[in-house]
Image (cartoon, rainbow, N blue to C red):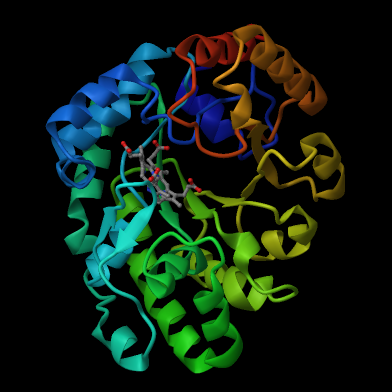
Length: 342
Ligand code: CP3
């Protein structure tokens, strides 16, 4: 069974020889080869240049043979940018948007048509990565959820409180809905172009799900994800990543997502018992282990694998993105542990 088959099989009942594995932010600052490219090119240039995006996408797969899937190097913020609101990085960390969306006039200025054309660099990179990997590895596309993107756009960048985003949802619903409609249309366009370019699955990141007002997660976020998944049809599986939302599993499933990705706060084996059988689970080793000792991370990996056995409909991943402090030998130990159960 090759890597691509292993990943694609995880959306069926067939048991694999071992769980497929990919890592969020596998292209990241913990890799010296990524940092070397970053010395020469800034992040946005790398994202927008298919040759560079292809190279960064492939770097972790060259280093770690056990990885089963390449997640295309890009960012969720290419969609606001393609709609007219660019992003940059704050010196002390975090995202700065080039403005704030607070009024109907601000929303009206956003252009949700032609998003796929203005982000053609991502489908070009996907085709190039597929050309390099052939059928040996899976290729994954991704994007942010409308709500997670809206938090950046309404707040004007990274935020700790999300007060303005929640204010708009609670008090200016027609305005909020018009922004979410436009974001959903732009995302549908982006995801269709990723599917046309040949991805094996798409992950939607609702990273800031927990910022939604209490009891309003469906109206604030999930119903827009459902709209997107419906528009895409079911040719390509959608993996839905959320943080802090495991109690909402019925609503998560109602979106039509074929797989649910859990953060590290979830007991995945317990969750599996509560969920219907046709749902694939992904996760959820604690990324805090990655800067630590290889033996500690390997033991936690073994425990997670044992708890999820037998491994049909399971994809191994971290509970959130890998950080710059991650140790290469710890990553290696985790991947070798997964491979050793074959
Ligand atoms: O996993 C992968 O390597 C695929 C590429 C990928 C990136 N970002 C590249 C990236 C993916 C899937 C993302 C998703 C993303 N981007 C999310 C959702 C996932 C999550 O973490 O919850 C979010 C919220 C963003 C927005 C974003 N981009 C943030 C918050 C940051 C970090 C900013 C900071 O100051 O640390 C980024 C930058 C970013 N995106 C990096 C990478 C590899 C680091 C860039 C660098 O400093 O070299």
